Image (cartoon, rainbow, N blue to C red; front, top):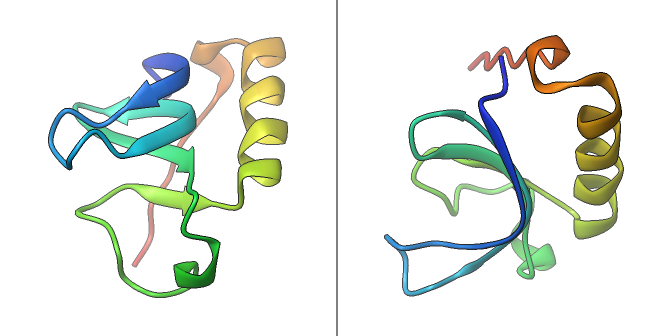
Length: 77
């Protein structure tokens, strides 16, 4: 399940990189928006799931409405 939300998070591990609309689900791993839209669909992260900022905003809003305990995150390779 999702653990916590952060609307304007910045990475403490990766040069203060912006992570808008972060939904943290496992330690430092999160689903979040990215400003590097051209790199979506290609590896560019150490484990986070990056989304277009508009999509991240929608998911963030839905998660907040449903509640963290109701947001199941399942990562499949």
